[in-house]
Image (cartoon, rainbow, N blue to C red; front, side):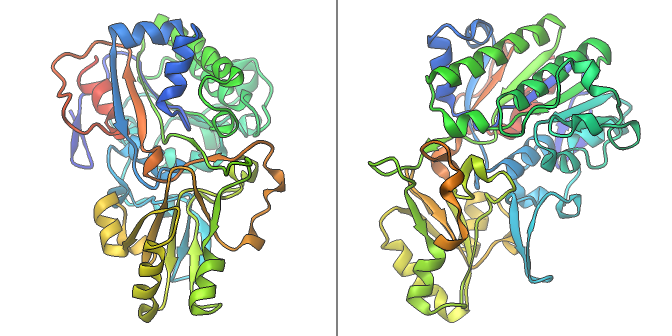
Length: 403
């Protein structure tokens, strides 16, 4: 048995694949199965184990991927967004550097125990975090042509996979992850394989949409190949996805910085949007979770006014948010704001270039995007249906129950 962050895991007896399908609102699977686009998944739902779980809030990529591979919430591993304000440096920075990690990953612990482990992620922003402390294969679709033995534990990825490097704004970026995973199972036979996709399709297409169904049909074909290779497969998501639009299909945004500046004066508040990353075509840096740094004398007034604002679901103090969402109190502001299902939060209007959004805005970040699938291709009997399942239970199910 291996112990990681207070949880115990059996060592893998057969290849074990855990997949994080970025942005996978459960209805994507339901609609694709109903449209007869996912025959493998349909069988898993009937003969395997199918649960609905909660992701961590903020429902963003980095916190949830790190929760899945650590088996713990952000209060343990420290990654509470894609982006944060560092008070010591007085700088806003991306949380891509492993220096922000506060806990080891199960992936690293498996390699310490002598198991072969491989990680393939769509975007390179996650690679260093997921691969921290791990001696094995770890590369991204985005920079697959640059993979080398010294940094990634593998070279010659493109000929191995048989695909060119995809555009970062494409469904093919995720298909490359699945194709690489299958080829690694065929050629390297890792004991554990972690695959993490991108939500480019989900940001643009609703469940049941023709393009969305085609994406899930593609995924289903790779799932069938993984199963045929004898793998235990657990599939979950980092967050769901919802439309964030007004009746005229324009983005439904509350620009918090502008609003709060109007209440207490410019230069007194700092709004941080943890969804922020370099891929602005996906979401325009607009999500349903924000944190605000304020002078202490302004906190009660701003909280009261936000509580009374249309489109706001929750306004929590630092202590309340840390407790409710299991996030590190020292990495969030004085207030945490969660917007309603159809609303996103912005900073100042002048800081968001929404001209690059190609379709009506779909995004995530709040409690409305917390429900995600948790599916295993093996029947697990005796599970407690009444308990709260989390996406970071994926490795627990795959290693402790499905082997």
